[in-house]
Image (cartoon, rainbow, N blue to C red; front, side, top):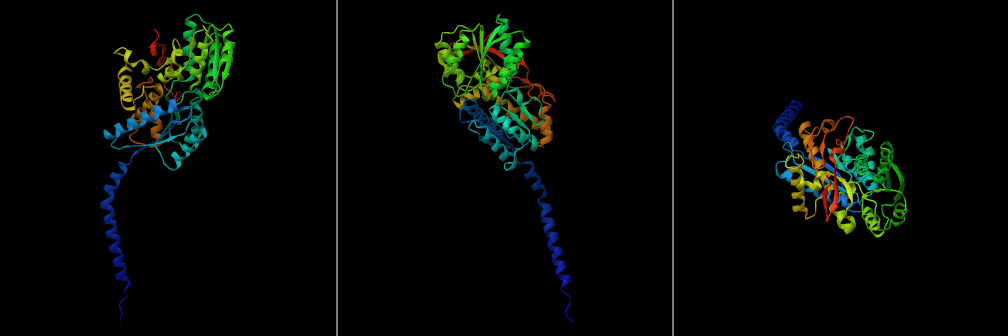
Length: 393
Protein backbone atom coordinates (compact mmCIF):
# COMPACT_ATOMS: atom_id res chain seq x y z
CA UNK A 1 0.00 0.00 0.00
CA UNK A 2 1.31 3.44 -0.99
CA UNK A 3 1.53 6.10 1.60
CA UNK A 4 -0.26 9.38 0.92
CA UNK A 5 2.54 11.75 -0.04
CA UNK A 6 0.48 14.81 0.94
CA UNK A 7 1.58 14.98 4.62
CA UNK A 8 5.22 14.91 3.54
CA UNK A 9 4.56 17.72 1.03
CA UNK A 10 2.75 19.72 3.67
CA UNK A 11 5.60 19.20 6.10
CA UNK A 12 8.11 20.40 3.54
CA UNK A 13 5.97 23.44 2.75
CA UNK A 14 5.65 24.18 6.44
CA UNK A 15 9.41 23.96 6.93
CA UNK A 16 10.02 26.24 3.96
CA UNK A 17 7.49 28.74 5.25
CA UNK A 18 9.07 28.67 8.70
CA UNK A 19 12.54 29.14 7.21
CA UNK A 20 11.30 32.05 5.09
CA UNK A 21 9.58 33.62 8.10
CA UNK A 22 12.73 33.32 10.21
CA UNK A 23 14.84 34.80 7.42
CA UNK A 24 12.38 37.69 7.08
CA UNK A 25 12.34 38.22 10.82
CA UNK A 26 16.12 38.33 10.85
CA UNK A 27 16.05 41.05 8.20
CA UNK A 28 13.46 43.21 9.98
CA UNK A 29 16.00 45.32 11.91
CA UNK A 30 17.91 45.88 8.67
CA UNK A 31 14.71 46.93 6.87
CA UNK A 32 13.82 49.31 9.69
CA UNK A 33 17.30 50.81 9.57
CA UNK A 34 17.09 51.26 5.82
CA UNK A 35 13.68 52.90 6.18
CA UNK A 36 14.97 55.25 8.88
CA UNK A 37 17.88 56.20 6.62
CA UNK A 38 15.68 57.02 3.62
CA UNK A 39 16.66 60.47 2.34
CA UNK A 40 14.66 63.60 3.03
CA UNK A 41 13.48 64.51 -0.47
CA UNK A 42 13.36 68.25 -1.02
CA UNK A 43 12.00 69.32 -4.39
CA UNK A 44 12.83 72.73 -5.86
CA UNK A 45 11.74 74.74 -8.88
CA UNK A 46 13.80 77.84 -9.68
CA UNK A 47 14.35 80.09 -12.69
CA UNK A 48 18.02 79.23 -13.20
CA UNK A 49 17.72 80.39 -16.83
CA UNK A 50 15.48 82.79 -18.73
CA UNK A 51 14.53 86.41 -17.90
CA UNK A 52 14.31 85.69 -14.15
CA UNK A 53 17.69 83.94 -13.93
CA UNK A 54 19.00 86.79 -11.76
CA UNK A 55 16.60 85.39 -9.15
CA UNK A 56 16.91 81.67 -9.76
CA UNK A 57 20.61 81.22 -10.44
CA UNK A 58 21.76 82.31 -6.95
CA UNK A 59 18.90 80.28 -5.47
CA UNK A 60 20.05 77.12 -7.22
CA UNK A 61 23.66 77.70 -6.20
CA UNK A 62 22.62 78.35 -2.59
CA UNK A 63 20.49 75.22 -2.30
CA UNK A 64 23.14 72.98 -3.84
CA UNK A 65 25.88 74.45 -1.66
CA UNK A 66 24.07 74.03 1.64
CA UNK A 67 22.54 70.61 0.92
CA UNK A 68 26.08 69.39 0.28
CA UNK A 69 27.27 70.90 3.58
CA UNK A 70 24.35 69.50 5.58
CA UNK A 71 24.89 66.02 4.17
CA UNK A 72 28.64 66.18 4.86
CA UNK A 73 27.80 66.98 8.49
CA UNK A 74 25.57 63.89 8.82
CA UNK A 75 22.28 65.11 7.42
CA UNK A 76 19.11 65.79 9.40
CA UNK A 77 17.92 63.32 12.04
CA UNK A 78 20.49 60.89 10.64
CA UNK A 79 19.02 61.17 7.12
CA UNK A 80 20.71 62.73 4.10
CA UNK A 81 18.90 65.34 2.01
CA UNK A 82 18.17 64.50 -1.61
CA UNK A 83 17.66 67.71 -3.58
CA UNK A 84 15.47 67.23 -6.67
CA UNK A 85 15.80 70.51 -8.54
CA UNK A 86 14.24 71.68 -11.81
CA UNK A 87 14.78 74.85 -13.85
CA UNK A 88 11.49 76.31 -15.09
CA UNK A 89 13.41 78.70 -17.41
CA UNK A 90 11.19 81.53 -16.09
CA UNK A 91 8.11 79.81 -17.55
CA UNK A 92 5.03 79.30 -15.35
CA UNK A 93 3.79 76.41 -17.50
CA UNK A 94 7.04 74.53 -16.96
CA UNK A 95 6.84 75.24 -13.22
CA UNK A 96 3.38 73.69 -13.21
CA UNK A 97 4.62 70.55 -15.03
CA UNK A 98 7.64 70.18 -12.76
CA UNK A 99 5.44 70.44 -9.67
CA UNK A 100 3.34 67.56 -10.92
CA UNK A 101 6.51 65.54 -11.51
CA UNK A 102 7.89 66.34 -8.06
CA UNK A 103 4.67 65.19 -6.42
CA UNK A 104 3.70 62.19 -8.58
CA UNK A 105 7.06 60.75 -9.72
CA UNK A 106 9.74 62.05 -7.38
CA UNK A 107 7.48 61.80 -4.30
CA UNK A 108 9.18 64.67 -2.51
CA UNK A 109 8.47 65.59 1.11
CA UNK A 110 8.42 69.36 0.56
CA UNK A 111 8.86 71.80 -2.33
CA UNK A 112 10.86 75.06 -2.44
CA UNK A 113 10.04 77.61 -5.16
CA UNK A 114 9.34 79.08 -7.49
CA UNK A 115 11.50 82.14 -8.08
CA UNK A 116 8.65 84.23 -9.52
CA UNK A 117 5.09 85.00 -8.50
CA UNK A 118 3.65 83.70 -11.77
CA UNK A 119 5.35 80.32 -11.45
CA UNK A 120 4.47 80.03 -7.78
CA UNK A 121 0.79 80.68 -8.48
CA UNK A 122 0.91 77.93 -11.12
CA UNK A 123 2.38 75.52 -8.57
CA UNK A 124 0.28 76.31 -5.49
CA UNK A 125 -3.00 74.55 -6.46
CA UNK A 126 -1.16 71.25 -7.02
CA UNK A 127 0.71 71.49 -3.73
CA UNK A 128 -2.55 72.22 -1.94
CA UNK A 129 -4.39 69.34 -3.61
CA UNK A 130 -1.61 66.86 -2.81
CA UNK A 131 -1.04 68.32 0.68
CA UNK A 132 2.68 68.81 0.09
CA UNK A 133 4.20 71.84 1.86
CA UNK A 134 5.33 74.51 -0.60
CA UNK A 135 7.70 77.30 0.46
CA UNK A 136 7.83 80.01 -2.20
CA UNK A 137 10.85 82.15 -3.04
CA UNK A 138 8.65 84.82 -4.69
CA UNK A 139 7.29 88.00 -3.17
CA UNK A 140 3.71 88.95 -4.09
CA UNK A 141 1.15 89.06 -1.29
CA UNK A 142 -1.32 87.00 -3.33
CA UNK A 143 0.84 83.91 -2.77
CA UNK A 144 -0.23 83.69 0.87
CA UNK A 145 -3.31 85.93 0.93
CA UNK A 146 -5.73 84.45 1.54
CA UNK A 147 -3.86 81.86 3.56
CA UNK A 148 -3.52 78.48 1.87
CA UNK A 149 -2.83 75.69 4.41
CA UNK A 150 0.19 74.20 2.61
CA UNK A 151 1.68 77.32 1.00
CA UNK A 152 4.27 79.58 2.66
CA UNK A 153 6.73 82.17 1.36
CA UNK A 154 10.05 83.70 2.38
CA UNK A 155 10.42 87.11 0.65
CA UNK A 156 9.04 90.32 2.04
CA UNK A 157 5.74 91.16 0.38
CA UNK A 158 5.04 93.78 -2.24
CA UNK A 159 2.77 95.50 0.27
CA UNK A 160 5.63 95.76 2.77
CA UNK A 161 7.89 97.25 0.09
CA UNK A 162 5.27 99.83 -0.84
CA UNK A 163 4.71 100.65 2.83
CA UNK A 164 8.44 101.13 3.48
CA UNK A 165 8.97 103.33 0.42
CA UNK A 166 5.85 105.46 0.86
CA UNK A 167 6.64 106.05 4.54
CA UNK A 168 10.15 107.17 3.55
CA UNK A 169 8.74 109.51 0.90
CA UNK A 170 6.26 110.99 3.32
CA UNK A 171 8.99 111.55 5.92
CA UNK A 172 10.89 113.54 3.27
CA UNK A 173 7.82 115.71 2.64
CA UNK A 174 6.73 114.11 -0.63
CA UNK A 175 2.94 113.84 -0.97
CA UNK A 176 2.60 113.56 -4.77
CA UNK A 177 3.98 110.37 -6.23
CA UNK A 178 4.42 108.73 -9.65
CA UNK A 179 4.15 104.95 -9.94
CA UNK A 180 5.83 103.00 -12.73
CA UNK A 181 5.06 99.25 -12.58
CA UNK A 182 5.63 96.29 -14.86
CA UNK A 183 2.81 94.15 -16.23
CA UNK A 184 4.08 90.88 -14.71
CA UNK A 185 2.68 89.20 -11.61
CA UNK A 186 4.90 91.06 -9.13
CA UNK A 187 4.34 94.43 -10.79
CA UNK A 188 0.57 94.02 -11.03
CA UNK A 189 0.24 92.98 -7.40
CA UNK A 190 2.64 95.72 -6.30
CA UNK A 191 0.68 98.36 -8.22
CA UNK A 192 -2.55 97.32 -6.51
CA UNK A 193 -0.97 97.44 -3.06
CA UNK A 194 0.76 100.78 -3.69
CA UNK A 195 -2.41 102.50 -4.89
CA UNK A 196 -4.36 101.29 -1.84
CA UNK A 197 -1.62 102.31 0.59
CA UNK A 198 -1.07 105.73 -0.97
CA UNK A 199 -4.75 106.55 -0.59
CA UNK A 200 -4.80 105.39 3.04
CA UNK A 201 -1.70 107.50 3.79
CA UNK A 202 -3.15 110.64 2.23
CA UNK A 203 -0.70 110.64 -0.67
CA UNK A 204 -1.73 111.47 -4.23
CA UNK A 205 -0.74 109.23 -7.13
CA UNK A 206 -0.36 111.84 -9.89
CA UNK A 207 0.95 109.38 -12.50
CA UNK A 208 0.23 105.66 -12.82
CA UNK A 209 2.31 104.27 -15.70
CA UNK A 210 3.11 100.69 -16.71
CA UNK A 211 5.72 98.98 -18.91
CA UNK A 212 6.33 95.49 -20.27
CA UNK A 213 8.86 93.24 -18.57
CA UNK A 214 10.81 92.95 -21.83
CA UNK A 215 10.64 96.62 -22.85
CA UNK A 216 13.97 98.11 -23.88
CA UNK A 217 12.96 101.79 -23.75
CA UNK A 218 10.74 103.36 -21.09
CA UNK A 219 11.40 106.97 -22.06
CA UNK A 220 7.76 107.75 -23.05
CA UNK A 221 6.42 106.87 -19.61
CA UNK A 222 9.22 108.74 -17.86
CA UNK A 223 8.66 111.82 -20.04
CA UNK A 224 5.05 111.98 -18.84
CA UNK A 225 6.21 111.63 -15.24
CA UNK A 226 8.87 114.33 -15.69
CA UNK A 227 6.25 116.87 -16.75
CA UNK A 228 3.87 115.90 -13.95
CA UNK A 229 3.73 117.38 -10.42
CA UNK A 230 5.23 114.14 -9.02
CA UNK A 231 7.77 114.80 -6.27
CA UNK A 232 9.16 111.22 -6.23
CA UNK A 233 8.95 108.06 -8.34
CA UNK A 234 8.48 104.41 -7.35
CA UNK A 235 9.40 101.67 -9.85
CA UNK A 236 7.67 98.37 -9.08
CA UNK A 237 9.06 95.43 -11.04
CA UNK A 238 11.72 92.77 -11.41
CA UNK A 239 14.19 91.70 -14.06
CA UNK A 240 16.41 94.03 -16.08
CA UNK A 241 13.75 96.62 -16.93
CA UNK A 242 14.23 98.71 -13.75
CA UNK A 243 17.89 99.14 -14.76
CA UNK A 244 16.66 100.45 -18.12
CA UNK A 245 14.36 102.81 -16.22
CA UNK A 246 17.40 104.08 -14.28
CA UNK A 247 19.35 104.73 -17.50
CA UNK A 248 16.39 106.45 -19.20
CA UNK A 249 15.82 108.50 -16.05
CA UNK A 250 19.42 109.73 -16.18
CA UNK A 251 19.24 110.46 -19.91
CA UNK A 252 16.19 112.66 -19.30
CA UNK A 253 18.05 114.48 -16.50
CA UNK A 254 15.12 113.92 -14.15
CA UNK A 255 15.29 115.42 -10.68
CA UNK A 256 12.56 113.60 -8.75
CA UNK A 257 14.12 111.06 -6.33
CA UNK A 258 13.88 107.53 -7.76
CA UNK A 259 12.92 104.52 -5.64
CA UNK A 260 12.69 100.85 -6.55
CA UNK A 261 11.60 97.83 -4.50
CA UNK A 262 13.49 94.89 -3.02
CA UNK A 263 13.24 93.35 -6.49
CA UNK A 264 16.43 95.31 -7.27
CA UNK A 265 18.23 94.59 -3.98
CA UNK A 266 21.21 93.02 -5.70
CA UNK A 267 24.62 94.15 -6.92
CA UNK A 268 23.51 92.76 -10.29
CA UNK A 269 21.16 95.76 -10.54
CA UNK A 270 24.07 98.13 -9.89
CA UNK A 271 26.19 96.31 -12.48
CA UNK A 272 23.49 96.56 -15.18
CA UNK A 273 22.40 100.11 -14.39
CA UNK A 274 25.96 101.36 -13.89
CA UNK A 275 26.33 104.98 -12.79
CA UNK A 276 22.60 105.46 -13.39
CA UNK A 277 21.97 103.52 -10.17
CA UNK A 278 23.67 106.17 -8.02
CA UNK A 279 21.30 107.75 -5.51
CA UNK A 280 18.47 105.23 -6.04
CA UNK A 281 16.85 104.08 -2.82
CA UNK A 282 15.10 100.80 -2.08
CA UNK A 283 14.01 98.60 0.84
CA UNK A 284 16.34 95.66 1.45
CA UNK A 285 16.91 92.81 3.90
CA UNK A 286 19.88 93.16 6.25
CA UNK A 287 21.96 90.85 4.03
CA UNK A 288 23.17 93.58 1.64
CA UNK A 289 24.62 95.60 4.50
CA UNK A 290 25.61 92.65 6.70
CA UNK A 291 29.17 93.77 7.48
CA UNK A 292 27.93 97.19 8.59
CA UNK A 293 25.37 95.81 11.05
CA UNK A 294 25.99 96.41 14.78
CA UNK A 295 27.61 93.45 16.55
CA UNK A 296 24.48 92.99 18.69
CA UNK A 297 22.16 92.68 15.67
CA UNK A 298 20.77 89.10 15.75
CA UNK A 299 21.00 88.90 11.94
CA UNK A 300 24.64 89.91 11.69
CA UNK A 301 26.31 86.50 12.13
CA UNK A 302 23.97 84.51 9.88
CA UNK A 303 24.11 87.22 7.19
CA UNK A 304 27.88 87.64 7.26
CA UNK A 305 28.41 83.86 7.26
CA UNK A 306 26.11 83.34 4.28
CA UNK A 307 27.65 86.20 2.30
CA UNK A 308 31.14 84.81 2.90
CA UNK A 309 30.16 81.21 2.02
CA UNK A 310 28.29 82.17 -1.13
CA UNK A 311 30.86 84.59 -2.48
CA UNK A 312 33.70 82.15 -1.78
CA UNK A 313 32.09 79.13 -3.38
CA UNK A 314 29.92 80.67 -6.12
CA UNK A 315 32.48 83.33 -7.05
CA UNK A 316 29.60 85.80 -7.30
CA UNK A 317 28.34 88.71 -5.23
CA UNK A 318 25.74 87.68 -2.70
CA UNK A 319 22.13 88.61 -3.47
CA UNK A 320 18.95 88.83 -1.46
CA UNK A 321 17.37 86.34 -3.88
CA UNK A 322 19.81 83.60 -2.93
CA UNK A 323 19.17 84.64 0.66
CA UNK A 324 15.52 83.64 0.36
CA UNK A 325 16.62 80.14 -0.69
CA UNK A 326 19.02 80.01 2.27
CA UNK A 327 16.23 80.87 4.69
CA UNK A 328 13.72 78.50 3.08
CA UNK A 329 16.09 75.53 3.27
CA UNK A 330 17.11 76.10 6.88
CA UNK A 331 13.56 76.82 8.01
CA UNK A 332 12.46 73.50 6.48
CA UNK A 333 15.39 71.71 8.14
CA UNK A 334 14.40 73.27 11.46
CA UNK A 335 10.77 72.21 10.91
CA UNK A 336 11.81 68.61 10.06
CA UNK A 337 13.69 68.43 13.37
CA UNK A 338 10.73 69.78 15.32
CA UNK A 339 8.31 67.49 13.48
CA UNK A 340 10.54 64.49 14.17
CA UNK A 341 10.50 63.48 10.50
CA UNK A 342 8.85 64.19 7.17
CA UNK A 343 5.21 63.32 7.74
CA UNK A 344 3.69 66.00 5.51
CA UNK A 345 0.96 67.08 7.91
CA UNK A 346 3.36 67.30 10.84
CA UNK A 347 5.92 69.11 8.69
CA UNK A 348 3.30 71.62 7.54
CA UNK A 349 2.27 72.19 11.15
CA UNK A 350 5.89 72.67 12.21
CA UNK A 351 6.52 75.28 9.49
CA UNK A 352 3.39 77.14 10.54
CA UNK A 353 4.55 77.03 14.19
CA UNK A 354 7.95 78.60 13.39
CA UNK A 355 8.79 81.27 15.97
CA UNK A 356 11.76 83.64 16.03
CA UNK A 357 13.67 81.94 13.22
CA UNK A 358 16.65 84.17 12.42
CA UNK A 359 17.38 84.25 8.71
CA UNK A 360 19.34 86.54 6.43
CA UNK A 361 16.06 88.06 5.21
CA UNK A 362 14.53 88.72 8.62
CA UNK A 363 13.33 87.10 11.82
CA UNK A 364 10.38 84.87 10.95
CA UNK A 365 7.36 84.09 13.10
CA UNK A 366 4.66 82.15 11.23
CA UNK A 367 1.10 81.58 12.42
CA UNK A 368 -2.18 80.11 11.12
CA UNK A 369 -3.05 83.58 9.77
CA UNK A 370 0.43 84.57 8.53
CA UNK A 371 2.35 82.28 6.19
CA UNK A 372 5.12 84.82 5.53
CA UNK A 373 6.16 85.60 9.09
CA UNK A 374 7.75 89.01 8.51
CA UNK A 375 6.68 92.61 9.08
CA UNK A 376 8.01 95.87 7.68
CA UNK A 377 10.73 96.05 10.36
CA UNK A 378 12.57 93.30 8.41
CA UNK A 379 13.39 95.95 5.78
CA UNK A 380 16.27 98.42 5.88
CA UNK A 381 16.22 101.44 3.54
CA UNK A 382 19.37 101.48 1.44
CA UNK A 383 20.80 103.82 -1.19
CA UNK A 384 23.32 103.16 -3.94
CA UNK A 385 26.41 105.18 -3.11
CA UNK A 386 29.73 104.74 -4.90
CA UNK A 387 28.58 101.53 -6.53
CA UNK A 388 27.53 99.89 -3.24
CA UNK A 389 24.54 99.75 -0.94
CA UNK A 390 24.59 101.97 2.13
CA UNK A 391 21.91 102.07 4.80
CA UNK A 392 19.91 105.29 5.00
CA UNK A 393 19.64 106.30 8.65
